Length: 202
Image (cartoon, rainbow, N blue to C red):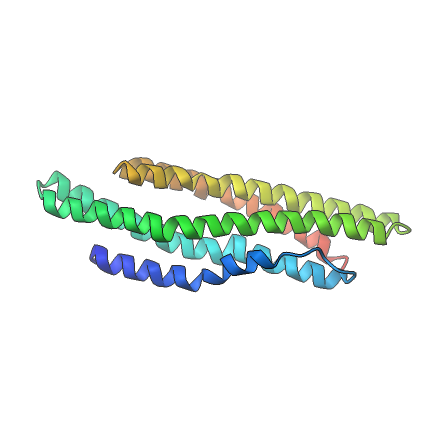
C-alpha cells in the first residue's frame, strides 16, 4: 500500500498536468463569424470539463480516500501519531490538489455554458433566413446547456466529500462521491446529445 506521502506526490503531479485548465478559462471570447471555429472551441472546453478534468480529479479523490482510510485505521488501532500524520496529509491533498482541480472544472463548465449561449445568440442572427437551421441550432444549444447545468450540479456534490474529509468522516465522503458518480453519466449523455445536433450544422 502506498504511503500518504507517495499519494500526495502522485496527486500533485496530476494536478500540475491539469494546470492548463486554469489558464485556458481566462481566454474566453465570443465566437467569431466562423461556426466551425466556435463549435471546435466549445467542444474542446467540454472535453476538458467532462473528460480530462474529471479523470484527473478521480485520481486525486482515490488518493484522498486511501489516506482517509489509512488515518482512520491508525486511529482505531490506537496509533494516534500515525492518525495525526494521516489527517494532516489528507488536509493537504484536499486543499492543494482536490479543491483547485474541482474549481477549475467548474470554471471551465461555466465558460462552456457561456460559449454555448453565445453560439446560439450569434448564429441564430446570422442564419435568420434559414428557420430550419436556426431551430436545430436552438435545440442543440439548449440541450447542451441543460447537460452542462446537470454536470455542474453533479460535480458540486463533491464539495460534500471534501467537507467530510475535513471532519475525518470517510463514510460521509464516500456518500458524496457515490452521489456524484450517479448523477454524472446522465449529464454527460445530455451534453453529447446536444453537441451531436450542433455538429450536424458544422
